[in-house]
Structure formats: C-alpha cells, structure tokens
Amino acid sequence: MMKFLYFLILIVFVSCRSNKSIITKNVDIEVYTYENEGEIQASAMPILSTESKLNEYNRRFEYLLINVPEIHFPQKAERRKEIWDLYPDTTKLKKLYLNEYVQDEKLTNYFELTKAAIWNENFEATITFTIDELLEVASKFFYCDKVFPDSTIQSHVCIGLNGISEANWSKDYKLLEAFCYEAIFNDLDKDISEIDESYSFEKNEACQKYKSMIVTLDLYLEDVRNELFASMKNNPVLRTELLEYYEHNKSNLAFKIMN
Image (cartoon, rainbow, N blue to C red; front, side):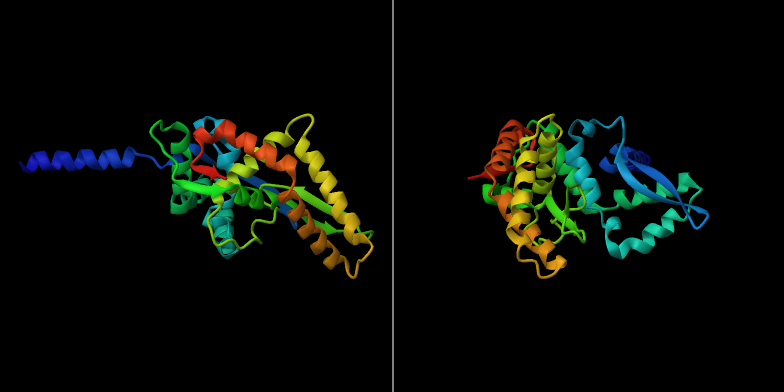
C-alpha cells in the first residue's frame, strides 16, 4: 500500500513538473546590448517564441506581454537592472528574467484566457464591453507626445507610447486594449489605411483649432492631445473599422461587444 502511494505521489510530482507554464512554452527573452561611457551594457525584453502557436495572433499577445508584467513597472527598475547586469552571462540573464514573467500571475491569467478564447471550442465569453468603451479605449492609441518650438506636434500610434497609462480607468480594459491595438494596426498595415487618413485629418483639425490661441507650448500640446482623443472617439471610420474587425474575430475573443 505504501509503495503504491509513493508511486502515485511520484507520478503526480512528475506530471506537475512537466506541465510547463504557458509563458515558458511561448515566450523567449531577447537581449540587447549598447555602449555606455565605453562599457558594453545590456537590456532585455520578452518576445513570443518563433515556434509559438500564439504568433497566429501575435499582436494580441505582444500587447499583453509588454503592458501587463509587473517587472516593467517603474518601481521594478532596480530589479530589472540587477538582472541585466548579469551580462555577459546571457544564459543566466535570460533564465532569471523569463522567471519574472512566469511568476507573474496576472500575465499568466491574461495569456490563458486569451488562448482559451481562440482554441477552446467550448469557451464562452462572459466579459462584456460597450461600443462606447471600445471607442474610448481605441482613441487613446492616437497620442500626441511632443511639441517643437515651431509649434509642430509629434504624435504616435504605439504599443507602449499612448494615452492609456494616463486614463486612470477604474475598469479593467487590458483585453480590450489588446484587441484595439490589433485591430488598429491591422488597418494601418494596409497600403491604403482609412484609419491613418482619418487620424491625420483629425490631428490637423485639432492643431488648427488651437494654434491661434497658444498661451504656452505645453498647454497647446495638452489641448491638441485631448482634442484628438475626443475626435477619434467619435470618428466614424475608426468605429466602422473596429466593429468590422470585431465581427470577423468575435469567435476567438475572450469578451463580447454589446450595443
């Protein structure tokens, strides 16, 4: 009897050890080097493994991989540096840095949920968002980040540099953010992008609206930024593109969009 229990425990233990994390299975660490005051230093970022099945929906997972992990937070700067300083021992650096993502429960949960929605035939989405929430989140990707002395305003549509971190929403929109990022860039990648044309038009309109009443360049930048957010939220082209992309992909999403 004792021998049977021993083998049963051993089987369970081995099974648990072989059940790799979804992060371990699908994420690699890329090391980047640069010169600083004559010294070669390194930084690192997570990427989807080239053989990962998740690459079929790479933008969706890449957004989560960049914007969810706690190790990317400002308060984790010392921990990041501690690991990066292991260079040139890239094997140890990659192992310890990957472990930060493996141990991140929030990241793991988002990955598991997103994956289940795509490949689990019995998955049923219970999370819901409204069209207004969809457009609110999407608008924050069109971000004015800098103003030059001649009043020219620089703007981006970016995975990391956007207005989402400043939004301070009380509701968790991470899955919706990842979808918006994917949908927007699906259109921006086209030879002729209707979203890009609308974005350029709305930005120019916002600049013209406030250019004649500049008090300071910083205030001008803030006014144009907020105006662009508002105009993109109400932009019919963006609305149409997002909803069409949702209809095409709703069977593989972990949420529903309601009217």
